[in-house]
Length: 210
Image 1 (tube, rainbow, N blue to C red):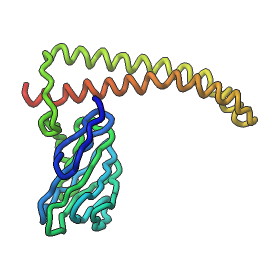
Image 2: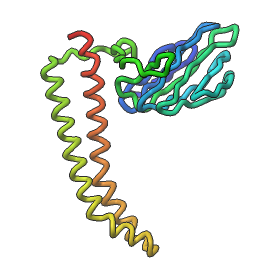
Image 3: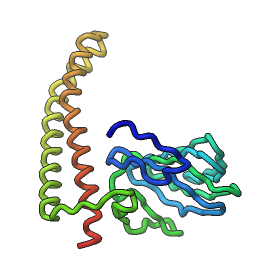
């Protein structure tokens, strides 16, 4: 990948999209009102690079200008109104980026149907793998994730009492040894979960073109 350098004055696009994070620069015209939505899983970070905008998050609002940042946590309804006379440019990131990422709500507070953004919406190329192969890959990855989780659960269960006792009696060396064993058990689960999210993000938009 090298060391790409991005400039908010030129790179108005998604610059990094993975299941762990989607990050981009976004440009909004004066007077733009972005409809409120939430994210079921993701926390969203906003950093204003140019201009001003009112961010409304979870019923509270604040006007941000260049150099300021705010955060919408998962499930917090949030919207944006540009208040500057110039374009408002911001950096934003959503973590994790697992489809469907955006949840819309009706005026009466009811959840609207999920929408799955096409790869082009995130400046990515669509997956062209045969759908049967992609579904099989999802199944294998889900199975591997479950197996890794089961193995980790067994090891955590087998060490839990000893870990608690070592911490309670202040045996730092023993606690660190057990912690290392626990990490070796659970880290494959995180890696498998990343793989599962990646396959899911490739599969989910394909239903729109079935």
